[in-house]
Length: 234
Ligand SMILES: [Zn+2]
Image (tube, rainbow, N blue to C red; front, side, top):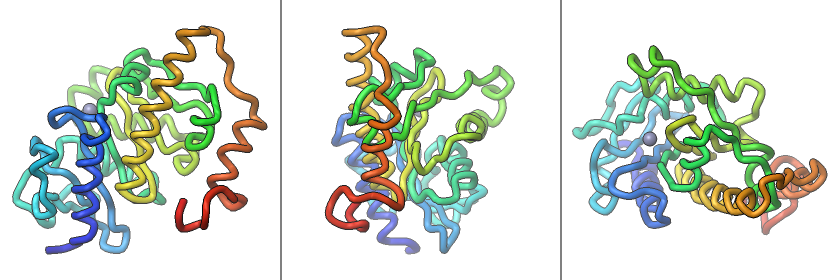
């Protein structure tokens, strides 16, 4: 069996989505990529998170051809693949319909950086995509979902903004590994919940200063980072 440790990590990452309350039933998926092998490891379609085993994980190439596995891959595979092809630094992708992040996506609203919790992980407003056209929905829906994300990131660095809200749908997050992608999904959900409460209490709540955003994001991420114990532990 190819990529055994990646398969185990992808199983754990998917189960973490459920364990943290981000998905119910099968409403979500996580994947990872081995850039060396050019292979993506993704959850199979419609399998319960509890029942998921490493051998159930489906391996595909970057065009979506199944290389190893007997089950059908998650139907969101073409979205994951478009992100891996376009964001060449990322190693994992997660998708859920977590309540608060999805509410912002359904409202068609990006999430401004209203506080330092947000600034620690997302460098600015978490973007929302343009609504998809009927044409883009009717044919190659999942691929076009990925394209709408990539288009939204034309002038945004996916390394400093590891999350997006797909309009009328829900969040996708990514990271250096499947574990990090799911971590970002969990943090996004909490940040989305805080932002909702904040604008409920004060609808004119303003984003924090750029200096504040820079201080919090850049001390944890990038070449000048100093937060935590070592570069490897971040
Ligand atoms: Zn979805």
